[in-house]
Length: 341
Image (cartoon, rainbow, N blue to C red):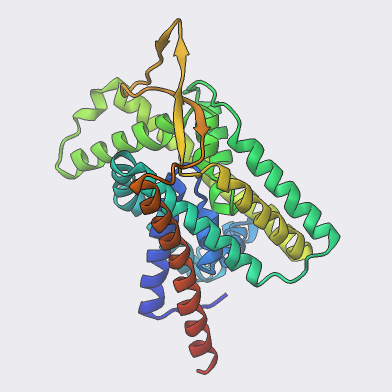
């Protein structure tokens, strides 16, 4: 790992963290896919892998500089910091766009994923029978996940901790959307909408000197949920990174083939032309705590080619593909420039 980075590298890493955080917030889109395409996936996995016994020994013995360098902390702080800031900025913009321009947002993401498949596949030349089989398995798993029905919301703290472990998979497994998994577990609104909003309100109040939230029982409960979810995510991130780091060293090609399959299978989740199916109980729509109808699943359909919005959506698909190709082009130029130094 690099010991020092230029100011431009640091800004670039933070921006990549912002994009990754925005992707993690959107159901069906994988933050891990963003890290893969933006070429920092393996460094991220190996950096989290450095959070181990040796790191804690350095920390508790007061060797802070050695701890900082050993854990590649500059990288982790910028990436994780970008993710956190994104939840209160870029991801909120995407939430707004999903409400008002849903078809075009999904179309753009659909294009981004197609472009990502091309990007990853371009650098992968080992299509043996074994790797093809593993990739096909990844496709089947991705499709199966997209067809599952969501469970009911559950705010039990042990279950929330497990949600944190599972939900963080979107950061470590490209193609597997952690936010979509949270929808299937029934806790997407609770953990990534309600709790995040309550945390934001609390931070604003504390900065203004208002501590009245301490007497607000529902607010305290949300903060407890957010703390447990964060702990579960941190635990899951470190554990899965250790597992993936071990696997990547020994079966790099197989893992890449599986990732290509996952990402391909996830196309079904972000298919732009779909109709929401809401949960119904006793002949009436079921609503969550925010007053929104509870989603049961999606009914996908083929687009009507006679509609103008269909062709606009197709245009956004090509825009999504183009974004990945442009990032790939400039990424190659940057790598060439660095190699000449």
